[in-house]
Amino acid sequence: MLSKTKIRIFLIFLERVFKNGGAFLITIMIAKYLSIDEFGAIAYGQSLVQIFGVICTFGLNGIVQKKIITANEEEKIYIIQASMILQMVLAVLSILVGFLYLEFTNESELNKLISIILIFGLTFKSYETLKLYNEAIGKFGQNAFIELIASTVLISMLLWLLMTSRSAAIVCVVLAFEGGVSLLLYLFTTRKLKVFSTKIKSFEKVKELAVNCWPIFLNSMFGIIYMKIDSIIVAEYLGVQGLAQYAANVRIIELGYILPTIIMPVMIPELVRRLGGQDGEFRNILKLMYRFFLGAGFFFVVLLAVLGEYALKSVFSDEYWIDSYMMIILSVTLIPVFLGVINTQHLILIAASRVIYYRTFLGMVVMLILCLALTPKYGLHGAAVARLIGFLVATFSLFAFREGRDVFDLMSNAFSLKEKKHGIH
Figure 1 (tube, rainbow, N blue to C red):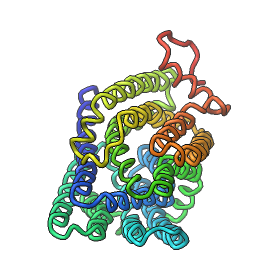
Figure 2: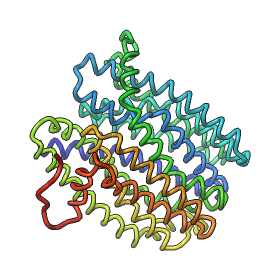
Figure 3: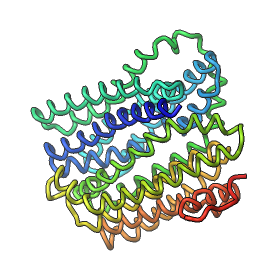
Figure 4: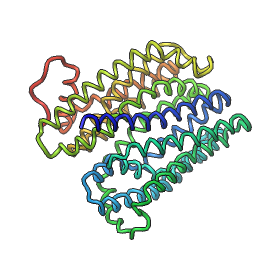
C-alpha cells in the first residue's frame, strides 16, 4: 500500500512539474522576449480569465471526483457526460460575461485584445473532467504523459513565435489553445469510455450536479476573485508596468502551490473511503495532513525569503524587481494557502460546503477593502499586505461559523505541540 502511494505521489509530482514548470517557463519566455507593458497586459488578461473561468468550472472538480470514486462503471460515464455538458454551456456564458466586462471598462486596446483572445481559451475547459476521472481511477501516469506532451507542444510553438514574430496577440492565441491540446489528448486516451458515443442520459445528472455544486461554485468565485482582485486593482492604480512587477513576484511564490496539488489528489480518495468508516481514522489522516502542510508552509516561507530575490533576478530582468520585503510578505501567504486547500476539502467531505463560501467571501471583502485603501498609498507593498491579510482571514475565520468550528479545532491543533483530546465530531 505504501509503495503504491509513493508511486502515485511521484506520478502526480511529474504531472504537476510538467504543467506548472511549463507554465513558469512560458512566463519567463514572455518576460524575456516581450516588453514589460505586453507582459503586464498578458498578466491582466490571465487574471480576468481565472475570474471568469470560475463560471465555467462551477465548482465541479471536488464534487465530480468524489462521485466518480463511489459510482459504478455505467454511472461514471453519465457523470462525465453531465460534467462536460455543463462545463461547455458555462464556457459560453463565461465568454459572454468576459466580453461584457471588457466592453464597459476603459482598458487600453492592447489589454482588451489580449484579454478577449485568452478568454476564448475557456471553451476547452471541459478536459478537466477527464483529468479528474483519471485521478479517481488511479491513472496518474497517463495524466503526467498528457501534461508532458501538451507542455512540450505549447513551449515549442511559443518559443518559435517569440523568436520570429514577437507578437503579443499571436502568443495569446497559442496560450488560449493550450486547453485544446489537452482536451484532444484526454479524449484520445479515454476513448474506450465512449463518452460521446454512449446515448446521453445525463440531463438529470446535469441538474443534480448543478444543485450540488452551487455552494462550491460560490466559494470558487469568491476564492478566485480574492486571489486575483489585487492584480486587477494594481493594474487600475499602477498601470500594466506595476502589474508586470507584481505578477513576476507572485509567479515565484506560486511555484510553492505545486505541493498541495501533488498530495491532495492521492489523499482525497483515501479520505472518501474512510469517511464512512471509523471516525478516528479519518481524523488522524487529516491531523497528519494539517501538520505536514503547516511545516511545509513554514519551510517554503524561509526558503523564498532567503532565495526569492535570487530566483527573481535569475529569471526576470532587473526592471521586475521591487525589494526583499515584497518577497517576504508574499511568501507568508503560502501558509494560509496550504492549510486552506486541506480545510476546503475537509469541509466538502463532511458536507459543510456552505461554510467554504462564507469564509471565502469574508476573505474577499477584507482583501478588496484593504487593496483599495493600501494600494494607492503604499503601492505594490500595500497590495501584497492586503493579499496576505485576505488569505489569513479566509483560512482562519472558520471559528466564526458553527459548522466550521470542529474543522478549525483540528487545523489549529497543528500549531500545538501538545495533543488535544477533542476533534471532529
